[in-house]
Length: 307
Image (cartoon, rainbow, N blue to C red; front, side, top):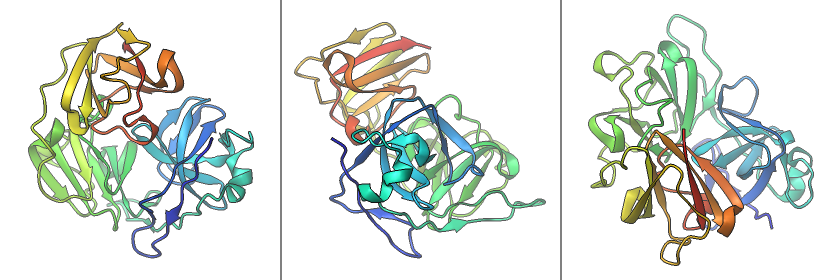
């Protein structure tokens, strides 16, 4: 059964925030779906989701035409025309009001680029990262409170400029994974990261100015393996397996007990909420310090694949 998610709107301050006791509404993608930085086709694509996948909907904007969604570590905006209610089969764009989904009030920040016109506005409570100077090339955004302790290979050591929304709380970036090495804090746009900072970011945290991440962290997984941990931030008991390994039925000591996954770049994993690769399944290609939504402490089967 789909669960509803309610939002508390903080007008003019933080954009939006969730109630502590909020439930989650789940929708299903009807086709391969682009996820964008903002609610409209003028925003850059930051990822895609295959058709038939279950996503979490935080709320919608522009008359339920666009919704803010989460899918594993990916979160952003998607067209509600291609999100369907699992029970009714109708597009969320048509029945968003009937479902009781919240309409989000967005407060956007648009900062002129040095020597050129400004780009599309970004949500004010987010930070956006770009592969080229002056906010050019590919990019992705993360909201206040989000972090990535181990940037996936497609973004590790590739960030050259950063845009910082006014209500994001700034961004803490580090040269090495797990918030190690040289770290800097930015509370405004950086049109061109210079010197040793350019193309040298491997972890970030939005909305926290100082202090390293939780630790100590365990060593990286062996080459070609994925490691599963009992606690968030790769803590507690763990087990590691190599490409080709699978478990259709996790043992009682591990069933519904996995909270974080660390993945060597040579492999990716599929995890499922039920035995025999049933229920809701997700493909994960990079380390996740804290599983969220329906995956937290809910994995019952897995498979590991070579890239």
